Image 1 (cartoon, rainbow, N blue to C red):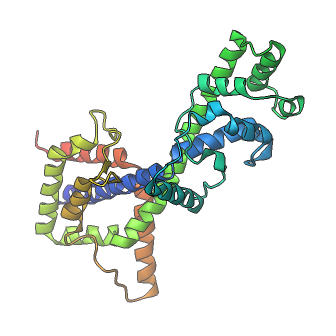
Image 2: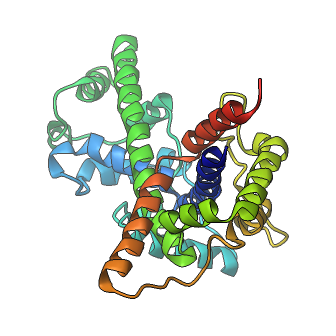
Image 3: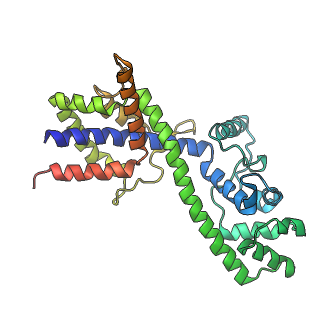
Length: 317
């Protein structure tokens, strides 16, 4: 039973900090419009794949189209809103997402295949710009528009939609990889800030039966009372539960989650000042932080599912 309590305690701490890291990652993604940035990078690649990330003339015309601008978030008129827009642009640059162009300060998080085709239809095409698009459904669709005086051929439109949806499905996977990459850095920052030394925590739990039993009881209570608010029946993270809007209409990390981390994880286990007598000791601590960051990148559903299995095993039949 002691071994199960130690493992469950470690996983519980990892779960709480993974939820916190995921909330911070979602907060950053919200403030820099990460989904919109990924979408614009994909459209930029679609319209100029040979340029390897540089903006093509076709892309510039696409973003300057009034049909596309109607899909974007409108510019803020208030001083506070303009300040947030300015901060968003600077944070994008900090995370390496600054190259999407001034024309898309408020990029949409989603553009349907129909909307994409509608924007293409409103653009002015020249033989030179058309020639810059590689052969494929996109070029076939535009050539069909040119040859039929703007009339849409249903077969060409259907082919364009299938191709566009396939590309966007790949973008969703790209977004998840980008989010996981950010999650690793957030996990490392949390591990260093709170000194989440898994080796030391495991040793403390093995030596302190009172603390181990108390943490296990807290874990069971949290699983019974709080877990359902974060996870659905299939163990997947519910959308929108990690962030909330405060009284000043600012998006922040859920206050209950922050209280849970302080209440269940920090007392006697996490948040202690790191101490080591030698270089090897410091390397061990830093190595534990990196290990924690990697574990956090596994995602909250992984640790939640593992914790549920341990709880089931520990209960008497």
